Image (cartoon, rainbow, N blue to C red):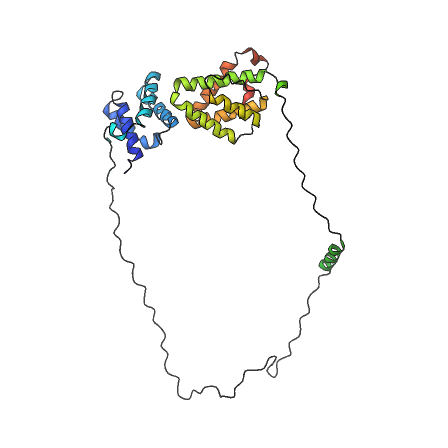
Length: 305
């Protein structure tokens, strides 16, 4: 029988927090674990540890150790974890007993007696009335004449006289003109590269467990983006060696802004909106120190946001 995932998270967190917090504080954290740690993904582990830093005074180094320790213990065999300090409690109320459904109410049936004395069946020679027979004294039915709408009749005649027009053949859309990458300005790719290198470096340094998840989320968002094919291919190639790539993707500033939007959405998935804003703002501020930023402001990369 597979272990309860929530119980496994409590056991992993309990093992990681021993020596970091006192027993009462640990039990307080575990009591709210169902709302603060809902999966084993690195992004959820990071958000959970970040919620502990303020109330319990954990510094950056302690948080970084907790990220790695909890993430590792969540993937260890069950036998290596301590027992669950908060086993599931018994239900407060016993289930209501089941009773058989009541029998349907009796509905009395009408009683039919024998035919009364003097009742006689129809005589053998009785025949039904012939079709069209009307009792004497009733007026003869008159035939209803169809009502002719003169406007509708005129429209029908006009439509019949008009020649039939054949539908036009579908016209194939014009092919998208190829982009001359050599004619694009060089400043936007240089600024974009500086922003992306800073984003990747910060996540890799402070949240190494989340870098792979950020890559997957970025590529998932890329498939739903408006970026052209050549920009998508370059973006995928950059993520295949994210820490070594210069990220200077040759594309228009509009397409690069779309790739920044893709990256921001992936950051939101991993760190929440507040964390994503902070990471991106720090990267933009660093890029503003470039000489190329005088000709192309890094803030223009936010055009698609």
